[in-house]
Amino acid sequence: MATRAWYEQQVRLTRHDGPELRELDGMFGRFAQPGAAFIDPALVTQDIVALRAIIVDVNAFTTKVLAHRDDSVGRSAPSLPPITWADLDAAIDAVGTIHKKYYSLCYPGEALGSLTPLKTRERTRLFDTAWMPPGFVAPHEFEFDPRP
Image (cartoon, one colour):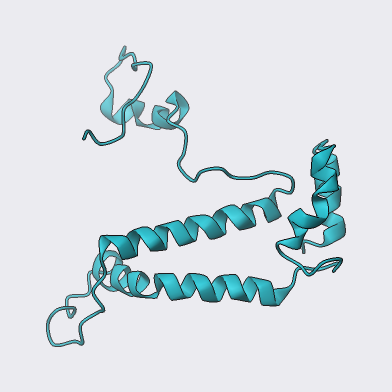
């Protein structure tokens, strides 16, 4: 269980100093009341409730239509609430925000700036055997972003 003492110990073990140690109380304070030794379940519950409120329609749609291909959707079964690209974007952003917040609880003293992985050669190396012939030399930069 992550306690204030454990959190502080983890920050010190990673050799953080200076402002990070001075701001330690505020960093753990996102998860607990000021000076409390343990994470406040009410704060976590607030995050879960807020997340569910944003993702409920998108989750229902993706579960029934994408993940399990429920053939009854659109026929005699009650229809699902319509979702838009904006709904989908909001749900993805909400999941990312929560992930970044709780990442710092798992890795004290660190912050996750982005959920997008780096485009490195190591990440694409797993595809070498299946799609790249022997002797293939990868370009310096892979372009994965869609063209405008």
